[in-house]
Length: 125
Image 1 (cartoon, rainbow, N blue to C red):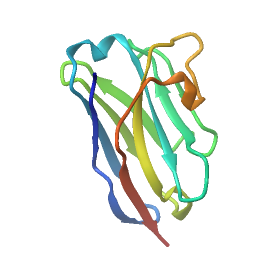
Image 2 (image 1 turned 135 degrees about the horizontal axis):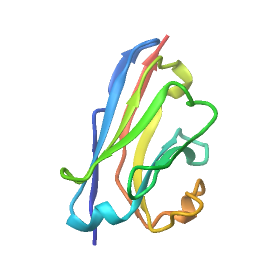
Image 3 (image 1 turned 180 degrees about the vertical axis):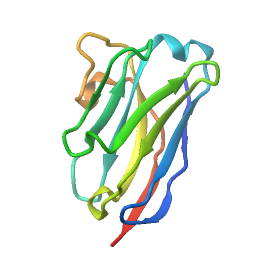
Image 4 (image 1 turned 90 degrees about the vertical axis):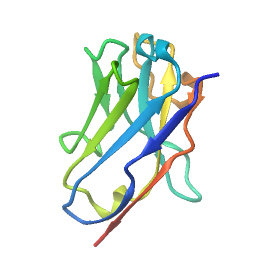
């Protein structure tokens, strides 16, 4: 069973930046796509970004397009989410997830088969 561990969350002022990391425990993680989701209390989990197994394709939610960048380092079994120009509405628990699907890259949580515990991101105004 793969384990995904997120890190890099924290408190940042509006307009600031953070980089989240998601480390996978298995060496075959490079054969899977991976995504980031976020959730605030009382709301459904929201799709943020996804990257294909080879890093060649990405997809972003409209709310973060142009501000967030997803990337991967397969030598490190790690997925990253670079977040710039952060807004208070970006405040949430951010989780990474693994997907076996590649075409199309899924936006729905049901398309993912392993999840991390999440890391809190708080953006102050």
